[in-house]
Image (cartoon, rainbow over all chains, first blue to last red; front, side, top):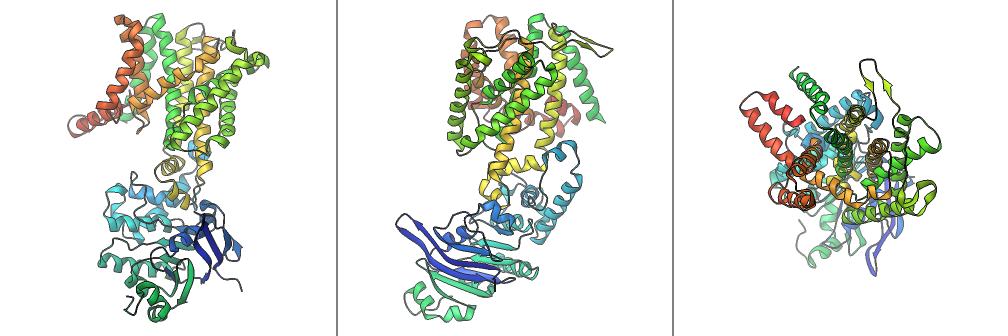
Length: 255
Length: 329
């Protein structure tokens, strides 16, 4: 049986350092999957390999059975796997709406000749509608004309997800989406992610915030020092002795 | 409606302008018209965040190509101008393979090296490029008549009207591109290339597209120049000219469409008319350099920031359409 998204024996070496060592796990369609681990465990490296930012040294990333490892980031994106970035990576100089419009690049591919002659009115309207839809989903529609760099931190994070959502992805890869959010913002964001999942979008999260991860994810993969450590539901992971040891080196509670 | 009136006034002013000028000033006006297209096309490249030092040589590619097409193959001159632009765009696409392995400062240096290679090829090969002496006796635009006006291309006024028409069309196309989703994607590539790529934007393709379009219009500008002065040589397109283009773009500012055009017009008027009339002939490069340094120090956002400030104040107070007229000029 082919899995929706499968990581198979993924290995990344930077010179002599093995950042990720023969990591394998699968992500099922329509789930929220968490990828956790202590600092330096190789979570972000794994994430970068799936999204096409890095080319893995060995191993493969399979999307619906197709090998997408080593493809460029835009080629991975065109297959439906869209990522967000750590921190507030946005087009800070453009307006909120323009940010979302860049996100609609894939469903409404710009055509330069149509644009000069003016035959792309339909597409422009469609892109506009899709961008507004994405902004409404993240409650940003009231800020559409603001400059993205002027938004508050929480709004910037939401806009980063709106840009990804605007492209009609099958999988969204979220790189530490809760960093720097207050508990209220985190709670709202978790609600939005559940709604995304219910829309049929698969989500893979790399995150430090254990509270959020435990409350949100259907399945969690834990890694440590580049290696697979444990996998299971939140409860299993919370009580897994190897995970507790990796995080604390002792007996205290993970969350 | 008032917007149309502004454009009509501008059109009439531009049509009447050469009749109030001396013969040599009319010639300068033709060069100015062509240079406006050069800086405006340069701005399209800067939209993706890349600054090239090869733009003037690419313009020369258009000039050489158009001259050779008309001279060797006997193609009708206005058609060769278009072919010159297409040739320049194709050369840019070929250059993009080595050049777009680099970004930022490295691209700048790489583009300079690549353009020097092209320039030295012109010098080296007497056939067909004419070596260091270049190409002489390039066919002029054939005269024609449109009923109300007879184009006689030995008159700068006629060539001014002709090139003004071509440049206006090119500027319109450049404007349409910038205001389209393609233009937005150029901005996206500039400000956050990784995020743009994650949204499915093919970075290489868009950088190449901007480079090719900018080069194509520079090539048309070069062709306009070649058929006007009738002789071109490798030194007409050396890095000194590129410094002028850079100065226009920087002094004018590149944040808006009209910024570089404004810089080009203001500095040309300052350079050719004011300084020449005042008799500062020898000191012109010095003053030009000083103007550039001063504008970087005191107007870091270029002349366009003055226009924006001015139009803001007008919009707050008096009639709003007068400010946009100031911007258009």
